[in-house]
Length: 315
View 1 (cartoon, rainbow, N blue to C red):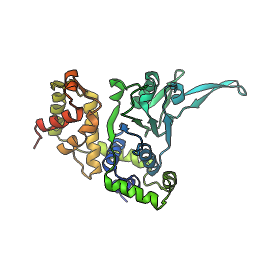
View 2: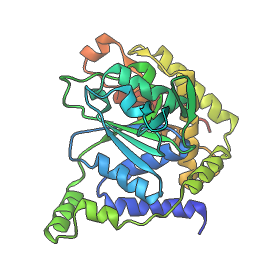
View 3: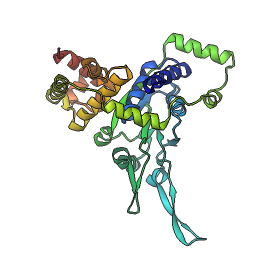
View 4: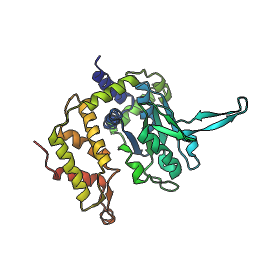
């Protein structure tokens, strides 16, 4: 089976296990193949953690989860050197960051110092402990979750750290038909979520993902697509309702995400629809509304949607 077909099969199986989140799952796969980290935002009980666990199982990757709270320290994530009395030497006890897929649950509940511990790892795929640089897995992928409803005792991520995430995905309630199927499965005792997870067999390997990332890089991009992206980015920087537009780093990430979307959909070239198709998850956490726009009730998603209709699409 061709590597592309295996990823399509993975996407189909993921949709059968986690019902009602097909678009979210596709965007997660796009981010994985683009090599970009993700923020999942949604109310409790919508399947954020389970989706990531199932995906990690399907790609046969090492998976670790951190429950972030106000008392979590950077060393709890990175690890620390501990003195071994028997050998009378310091021994490195590696933290959960030394994995392939890392789920950082409720990232906005931990203080900025601990949030910043993830920065070097996310950007450079390495960490520094006591002056020693330690490299992480080539796959290293961070998925952070946050609850949009609870603000007391939380620490909003600063813009510099938000820019390290490729996508911010909103996990919404599933449609009525999907929830009805969940009720039916529960009624028929088709197994707990943990039991279903244990029965899932891997479809692709970590090597397949790394190979697919190289194939994504080979997706063709015409010059008119470069110009289209530049026109869109300039419009965000000049938009009357925005105080912060697209950064050059975000522009590069935008192109990479569009290439991953094109590859998933079986194309070897990027179209304007690919650019528009990843715009919302890529921009919603990077653009800042002016205070007066917020008072008028505007939302970043609405501004982006309107902006995409204003910039002429290349022919």
